[in-house]
Length: 492
Picture 1 (cartoon, helix red, strand yellow):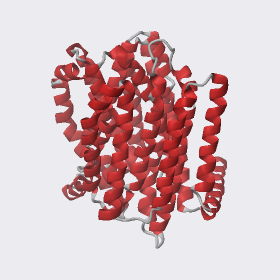
Picture 2: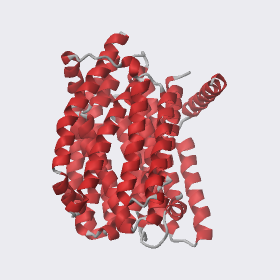
Picture 3: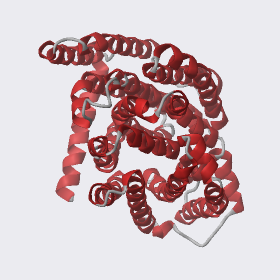
Picture 4: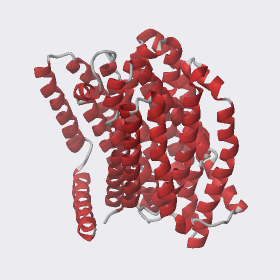
């Protein structure tokens, strides 16, 4: 099976795992919008937003470092020492970091929620970020070994345990936002314990300072990069919290949540793409293979973003009642395409990962985050809630541009087809612009018009942005993927 077929297979399996995990959690959003007040829903959203920012700090760059440094060692003993060293370092560092979070919970709550009385929510978020980091170490090891099926099975465990606990605490016991957070923490704990148990063969009571230096050299630059990615994604929420009441923010919080359905796909790419590309580059034709696979993955991501955009009115009806969330429809397309652009960044910056010069990736992300902070206030003042969403897409677009320049002209050039990539971005921009007028049509006209828009986008990709060789190669990859899937099913 070709490398792209393998990448696509693992992407599909990772996506299945994420759907079983976070997709089930997404199904809780309609429950929250109907049980919580709009103010409480926004408070819950701010908690999940803060978790996104905290996780990279508590992960300490170890999970991406394990994925990369693992390939530098051939013996299973040394690979086990890499994993154990990273995990022990994370555990030791958490004594200080989580302790500080507990100590300063009240001022942090005042900053986030404008109410120090919500300090307990901050403490739960710190615990959740820490437990997420433990599970992430083991899941990264499974990614490195391309054990995508096992990865997805573990996500299924969390996808069942967490939502069941949340339903019990929120719907049955009426514990509100705190109950939602405690239930999610329970699911994360079950996932971390199960993942570490699965990886117990790589756990050793060994700590290697030399290996830690290699892990830190790769991992530390990813911390500011990951934090700034969080800033690119969620900084607008903190601006809005200062400029609007939590109740007024509710449409944005909901629209953003629905738009992040795209994350189920882009995060699947992030999980499968680096290990596959690191293996491809060792082949004689590795650079060309990476470039072709990158183009195909970009097409898939932007097609999915267009699909989420075209289905936005129906998704909104499912996820929330109209009362309290008016205006969410205008947020969803901007966020869906923002995540597609962010996925494109992860695909393009693979050359930086191959070269191990992660400081350059951090520089691109930090530059885009600085621009995001600089312009978000202006966009919100002039365009309201929608302005925050526009600033998110603009910032990710700048990150993509900076990453392209750095990766292709400074660090590790790859033979990407620039003309076709620009064509894809132009096509996506046209689809985004066309979607808003279609939302305003009577529903009997709007639904088929949006279906036509998605069909036109797909045909333009298939016959305009893929050549005959691409289509033949994709057909071959699809057949190989189907054979592998059938083999897994019959073998299972």
